[in-house]
Image (cartoon, rainbow, N blue to C red):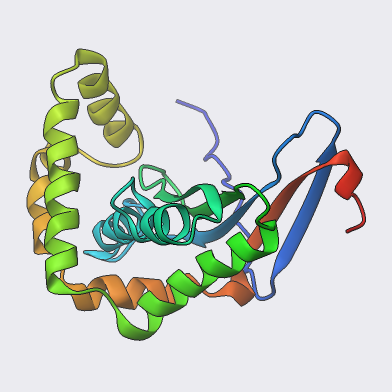
Length: 210
């Protein structure tokens, strides 16, 4: 009963782009990861977290996503490219994109192509058909996750531990279905600003200084 209130550190405002580079002799394929601080389901305004979830699905949520189709299938410059949003957090969280080159392609080319896909969504948004297909994939994955008891436990446990309740889990698919294309474009433009990002590069030892 006499426990003091917990002081939770707050992420400083990111008002400039930051980079960090790590080189290691054990790295055979270079890669990069860019992250932004974004709201979680606990801190976001109504509808924002759902829109970020669908933005991640459209941008890099599997082999039907924009990044995979453009960089891996069409251009053939990436061995991997994806995006994800960690929405189940008590405080703000992160939105991440990452990629790795294939063959003779350069890491800089992969990073530029990822940035271009983000810029396309910021400028032109997503189509209603693209959004509906993403919703179907996303809701379907929620349904399949309920086939496993450990997935169910994680789904409810993580929500309850970060300020949510059982009703939030039950109504989650319905809230995903209500997201509009304008809302997806809005969160992309609001949060995926390169000047506010942090990018990490993991490089082979011989690329140090390049």
